[in-house]
Image 1 (cartoon, rainbow, N blue to C red):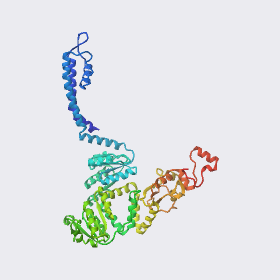
Image 2: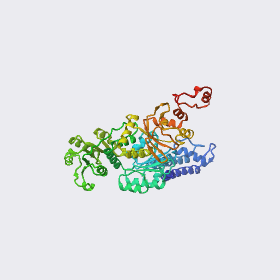
Image 3: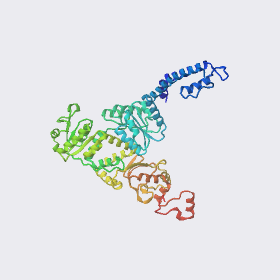
Image 4: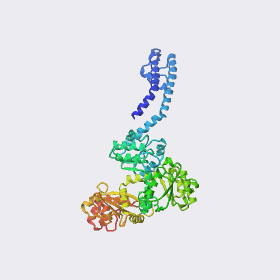
Length: 576
């Protein structure tokens, strides 16, 4: 607001002075020139009447001559005053219109409105720096879950796109450089409700600046950064940044995971996917020779993980020396049949179209399939707008950076315990994951399950927390019972129990619960809300534990005393 007032006063100083001079000059003339009253006696207008007359004369309203008819001299002065006041108003109005259209004023007003809205937030929110493909996907996913986000992006067209989006909750956005600490403070970096800072710009140095500012100005915040350079990633880790996501390394890791543990890879895809979307089919990449087209950051990451898995690769690169290709590299883009034949595509088991150009990647896929229809095809999608074309190509696996990063961040923000469970799944091996995949599909059907965490605390599970102090025999299967029909089971599965630092994967239904337990569940849509009812509602908990509905309210308690049937009977739900 200080900037707005300063800008208005600076731009309107001259027009206001001109307008003031025109009014003062007109008033002085009206006071100095004598007139004649009704009796023919000379009179002089006072300053009040002069100001009154000049006010409606200068605005061209024209009420008339007051308090008496003017003399010739007065009317001559009025004519002069009309012209100078109209010119002064035209000059002032022109400057007002120019001021309203001034980009600096618009930017200052937008920044003030943005900062005021952020200060008024009382719910927890996430500060998202960068609203490209990744930021757009993440913000939409957050708002669909009822979570709030605040966006800062350096490009005005992206902020305009944000305002046009129909999010379920309002998302304030500011066009500014998120690498500048002042703009981070305006975005709520030190706001008590800010839960995390997420750096998603396409500039690694800007993400590094955001990480440093967030670590120094508010060390308590969770910090999640995107990094495409290993040097920047090492720099971020040096000052304590825990969550750094490299989309190329992440995808290459999942590709290698699908090679040696397809069930664990499928478990990753299901538990970190978008809820209610169709379940993906398991992948079984072959282990023969692979052709890798493009040896940039993505190509290097894929080759490193394929080498670790013992999969031989042939590299196709347009500029091998600049890319740092190893020996025996085929020179070319891979879009030509002669280049792919030189890479012996007919003998290959798989191909990775990993250049930074979507058109080239699609051309590589089409040409390679013509030469070898049995290929396992992996392609890189650089722009989210190209999704319809890549879907039409029907490749086995698509690497879309924005989707990978958004999915990883969403899992960290909404279910941080999921990462610990997936690490445990790696230790148990592929066979264990295969059995778990079967159990999940039996519970959730053909859609990606919802994943949620329940903490048995007074704040999030009041009924269970209180009941555990009175009857410590409440078991996990009580939470898994339907509070409307206790003999039915909710369509969900307990994945992990965290108790006093101890991790128990796939806890048994007969496990007795304790205060402070943290449980990770996955299940069909709606199961989480039903379980929340049991956790919070004393009647619902009593019903699933005993089969009896405890009367609530004065009238129902009185009826329970006079009639044994009023207390409910087995099989009646808490809702009834």
